[in-house]
Structures are given as C-alpha cells and as structure tokens.
Length: 178
Image (cartoon, rainbow, N blue to C red; front, top):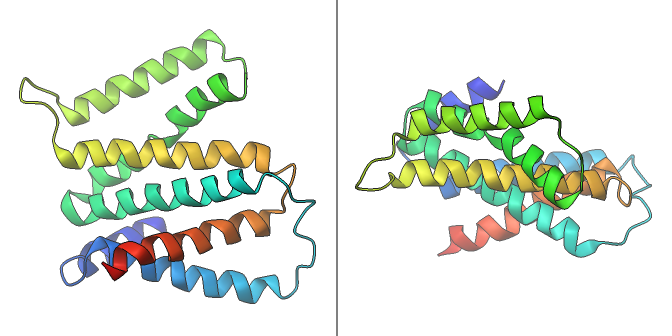
C-alpha cells in the first residue's frame, strides 16, 4: 500500500506540488478519522496538550518532507530517507526518555548513519537540498513517533491520530494557502 501511494504521489507530483498532495492526503485522512471517531467515546485522560500538538506538527512536517522528496528524487531514495526514522527514534528515546541502548543498538545506529552517508555522498560543496530535506523528514518522523510513547499514557490512539490529521490539514493548509 505504501509503495502504491508513493508511486501515485510521484505521478501526481507532475501536475500538482507536494504541499497540495500532503494537504489532500491529510484532509481525506481527517474525514476518515472523524467518521471512525463517531464510535469512540474515550479519548483518554488528557493533559500534555502541547506534546499532542508537537506530535501533530512534527508528523506533518515529516510527511511534507517525504512527499517533497517523492516529487523531486527517485522513489527508492525517498523511501530510504523515510526509513531513517527508526534511527532517530532510538536516539531520541535514549536522550529524552532515558531508555538504555545496548552496544548492539549503538552499532546499528552507527551503521544506519553510515548508510545515510553513502546515499547522501557529501562532498566539499556540501549536501544536496533534497538530501537535507530527506534527512529532516526522518528526524521529524522520529520526533513524532517518539512523542507517542508518552502520549499513550494520556490520550487514546484515536486522539493521537486525530491530532496528526488536524495539524496536517491546518499546518499544511497554511502552506497551501500561500
């Protein structure tokens, strides 16, 4: 399914820009989530609203970076950058959540970064914009997914997904408007 969405987005990006693709993707998702929420009455105990908004904004930014890359570089590389998020989840979990990573985890993180360097091929002239955006997409997605760890204690999955869709529509809608 994700590969199909990526391929469809690549084709669509020839006629509309990535901001519009992300906006309408989130709008359709928001409609589906709102329809599904009619049956759910428990959104959790609440609290940490700022973290909920942070998750929504960082997730929307990660998605925007991903769809930008789909439009501007080959699909394989765009998906590879998107798949860097677990590296950042591990790092953010160790730093922010004080989770202990064993030596094998740190080796995997190092190998992941080495793989990113092979893809980015940095040189004396610096990095390509598309590669920076791809890496930022992984970082934003990693931040969004790491925040879910704490949010699960206060909000239902439905509320967390809803925040992502609302921030995606509202935040990307601002870009879409301009």
